[in-house]
Image (cartoon, rainbow, N blue to C red; front, side, top):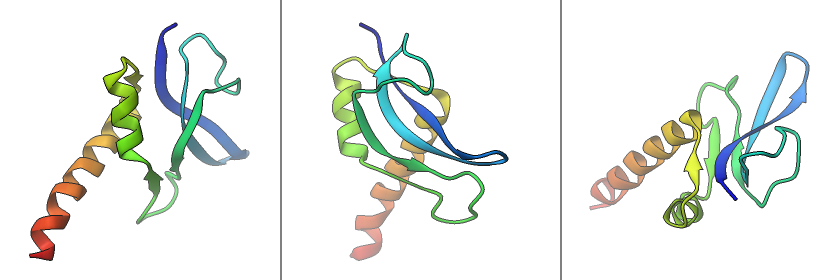
Length: 89
């Protein structure tokens, strides 16, 4: 079973928001999923996403492939985590 970390579209017409989920690659976009990791709201300016990056890393270690958008969000999260300890000191 090929596993993907991808976005699941939710929301009304022309007002989308997405949930970041781990799902079988063959399941439908609105279909079943294995785990929900967070959310992404592209229409917001700041703080437009939140997800459990540690849990995503665990899924990637098991062989899950992130979609392009989720990979981009994961890179942003890694940069923010790397900058946070430096700012605290």
